[in-house]
Amino acid sequence: MKVLNFGSLNLDYVYSVDNFLRPGETKSAMDRNTFLGGKGFNQSIALAKAGIPVYHAGNAGESAEVFRRELEQHGADVRFLKGGDEVCGHAMIQVDSRGQNCILIFHGSNYNIDEAYVDSVLDQFESGDMVVLQNEINTTHYIIEEAYKRGMKIALNPSPYDETIHRMPLEKLSWLVLNEVEVKDLSGQDTEEAYVRWFRERFPDLRVVVTLGRRGAMYIDRDQVIRHPAYNTTIVDTTAAGDVFTGFFLAGQAQGRAVEETMQIASKAAGISVSRHGAAASAPTIDEVMAAELEPVQL
Image 1 (spheres, rainbow, N blue to C red):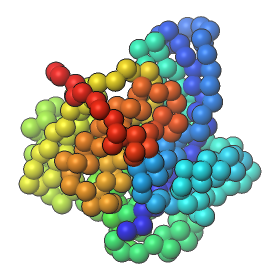
Image 2 (image 1 turned 30 degrees about the horizontal axis):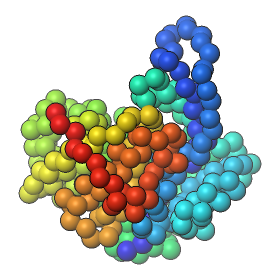
Image 3 (image 1 turned 90 degrees about the vertical axis):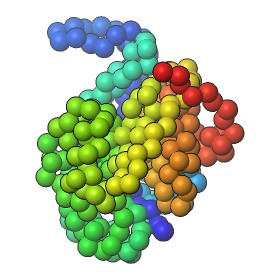
Image 4 (image 1 turned 120 degrees about the vertical axis):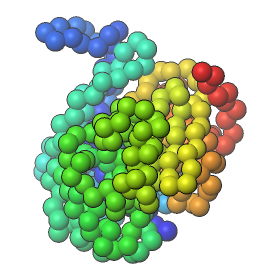
């Protein structure tokens, strides 16, 4: 199975603050760092560090070369990565004294992806291959339709969440990865029991993964619900924890690992990532994850 990540590439400008800015407030940041990011880029790095060969497709505009070098350094294939004269997508990220974050995104070149380019990339893959998607490029809906026609397995992490998700053909997905707020917004249900039932009734063939922060993660399919705890680490920066979890989970699925083992590996990887600064830079390697001795969070 080949894995294609058709995803975003952003420059992340990360500002350290004591508390998030309020409306009308001006304050000085304690520090500023610039990282390569974007949910697509973060997940490609996580997939590569998890030990799976991954191809990255997307448009990094004028910053394509720096993204190309970083992806290649971690083992991702960049033959489909586009560049050009457009301003690269970027994010303004505040990280507070508790390690929490808030993020403002400008799409830039991520929203300059046309259908001809999508077709030219997907033509290089075949039935049974996996395509990984987020919601930070302009052709996500089209890619789902075309990948499905080709018999590819489709994984969607629809973040940032917006109303376009309700118009996407979710029945054509193999995996859907959501956080707790997103799963409630999508299903319109307030409890775990209710949204589990909602997914099973409407999308019985869909495998849903819900990340629950300190409460761990949950896997749902038509036959089972599997819960896995989070792990205790010192929280420094939560910026890419969800992307690290997603990358390691999907890598495990592509490798044919059991769901229980995949959830454990992905949860450990996410736990390690929040103990480090940065987005993609915080992702551990699979060797680090397998060697880590972490204690589950006790709730």
